[in-house]
Length: 405
Ligand code: SAH
Image (cartoon, rainbow, N blue to C red; front, side):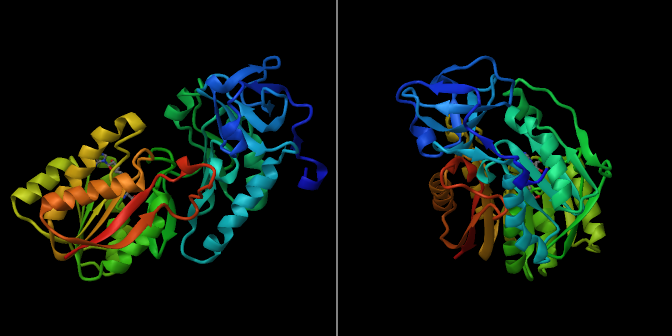
């Protein structure tokens, strides 16, 4: 069925969900989440993921949402206003079209095609790795759309296969369990090769982190590569070697990669070979970054560039204080390892740590390190990890590129 044939859903005729009095503000501001406490009642018992018409307590239609009976976020809005309409096909088409300039630029053959709420498809993540798409459906509403999404994707792009890699933690909040599944075409191989900014990477979409690769750092890997020439780079929290390989591609003298995960480092070594970086220019150290950095500090090692890309230290506002200590510790240690003129690319992917808080933490670390730093650049998630103005939660990755004075 094409769009013109009527795949649009209108608010009329959908089961009605009524908000409590005074709880319509977020829907009026086009924020996509409605929490359980804001819901006064719903007509009948809609199936998980079903579309509902959201009404204010006064009976005004506020839009269309997807019903998540088990989640604290009870409804995800997909369209707003009295005349709200929703078409999964139209949303998907717009999301893919928005990535076409990137894909045809030759910069990469891997990117995020659909970034959930920011692309108007709550809970839906679609990452493209060369000829393969890897999806996550993180809400009941997203799961309900998976068949249509897989079908439409095969119409939009020449894909060999579409794989669903469930995120168990996200799905637990929806009271759902799911196993990995091939939704269309062939099963993906154990390794998919992608090329990003001229560097080749093997991606393991079954066992790797997220859907297999940290696509959100693509632009920052390019920026780091552009500053790396002649430098000895320490790549902390390296995963499968991303920043280290990018730096070598940009002419770095060497890249020393630190990660706690042996499988990630094994793939990093494989990736170094794939790109022909040999002769000891690419090295890996398995260990806890906090301990490894302390050891380097104590033995007075120094570097021309350090990359710090830790995992999410805070997954809620309540965890910010503890996380701040962790961020400050590693940043202080990294700063002490930098020679004057050395560069630090430092990141936080915790949504609860705002850019302002992150800036303060890093500034505190610099005070304790007793050195001045210049901000060369502020860094963000790559543009394909789209962000919506009415959904600020979608901005999670922020970073700073600093030069030690
Ligand atoms: N920069 C990478 C992505 C990093 S993701 C890229 O561009 O692809 C964060 C990494 O931190 C993961 O690989 C995880 O294994 C690693 N990690 C988590 N805790 C760690 C710790 N305490 N010490 C070292 N590595 C850790």
